Length: 340
Image 1: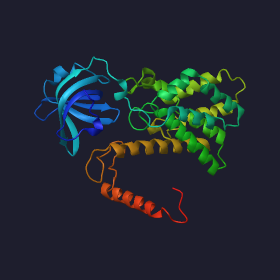
Image 2: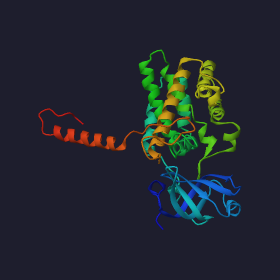
Image 3: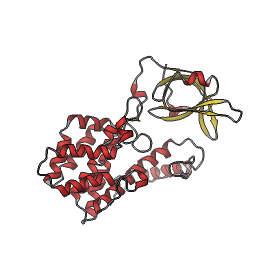
């Protein structure tokens, strides 16, 4: 049976197939009847689904992270497509895992090469040796290439951690060039290492979940521990430099309310927090706008940001693209042509 991608599900479509259970919760109607709310996913997105009958019986047959076989129909509820499930059972047959795991759209090999090229810009021999020790660690690099950067909001797909790390590192270099008071070597090293703890914080087969270490310690503490382990073999590493590097990791979320045990206390720490925050939010919001199923010019209400987001008039955007294309065509054959 050909898989029906979640992004292609339309109103009134009959649904039969396998989907990954990302979230599962039981609620009650005003009449006191139980119902099951699921978030189902594949690599193209997620969709809400409801089970109204035999809830207690069906709920015991599967858990979050399982792949289930469903039969149902897609309906619209509050301007959102939703699946009403008639039949559900846990799938125990072999399935292609790539159907359910979203991956970075960028080339892993090229991104890793670009990150190593940036690391080669580090002039401070102590920082360079430390970064090189991570890049020479086969297990670390293997996990870095596969790991997501988060469970839900930003870069929450296979390869997302490498994509995010490279992006933050690239911006660290640009920001350092713009602000000469910044120590580029320190900021770039912090950018490369700031989220390394996520390779131990998250598991990702088949669903992105927190590991025991992730729940008990978190990626910030795990990242500092990983740096400390490497520093044990670097006997002449300057103590203050090690302290500053650890502070970059500990403070990169910026505020206590956002999970940082420390707030940024020197220039490079402030810069890293702002760069990291921007990259995470731009990626997360871009995905939110792309995946939003709400009709009209506005997204559904976003609980994380406590606001609606403006999508604009899609027909106007399409018309603008057509006009841009026409203007490019008009430029062809002229004596002086803009290099597009």
